[in-house]
Amino acid sequence: MRVKRKWGLGILGALGLGFAAVRINGKLRPGPMTMKLEQFFLTNPVRVAYFGPRDALRLAGDLSGLRVLEVGIGVGVVLSEIAHRVGEGGQAYGVDIQSEAVRRTEHRLSTEGVLSRTGLATASATEMPWADQSMDRVIMVAMLGEVAPSQRVTALEEARRVLTPDGLLVITEFWPDPHYIPLAKMVRHLRQAGFSVVDVFEKPMLYSVSAKPVRALEP
Image 1 (cartoon, rainbow, N blue to C red):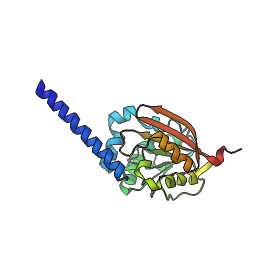
Image 2 (cartoon, rainbow, N blue to C red):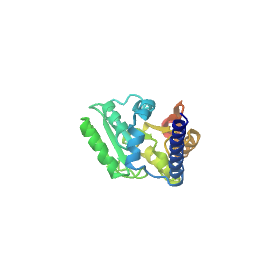
Image 3 (cartoon, one colour):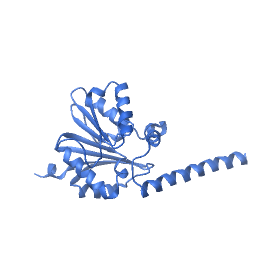
């Protein structure tokens, strides 16, 4: 019994040290996760049960017929849900700096039969290929922390550029993610980028915040 307990504690300790190492590395060297880590964080059953696309899109409202962009698509889990929600009258867009992420997402969307209503691009969050005011919603899920700290407000300003005047930005952060940004810090970033917070949803280890361009709130 003692041997099993020691083994169990040893495994938990190793997992804890591994997670701490990933967190520290994510803070010291912001950047996209490898595809293996993306796959684990976005598709493992425990994570999906607690935090799935429903939570990520909770504050986005009805997406039917809208143009919706996800920045940082990973392996396409959230973008797939977006493509289903916009329906045949809408359009889903996705961008990622990693070409492998775009390739995997394209395969997922094709398999699910929604590729025809999506547009994908390999590009930086700070320089996206879409026109000004071309999106009704911009979605970011555990992405902004992967951007260098000096460029995070720039990435949010780029999201504001592509949003329509009455568009909505929705950001979701999940604490175990190695690049997690606390809510208070995220709100500061949003204000610096010219957004005003509309709503916040929180549960343990997770929050979503929605924001509108300041110009949309002026009388």
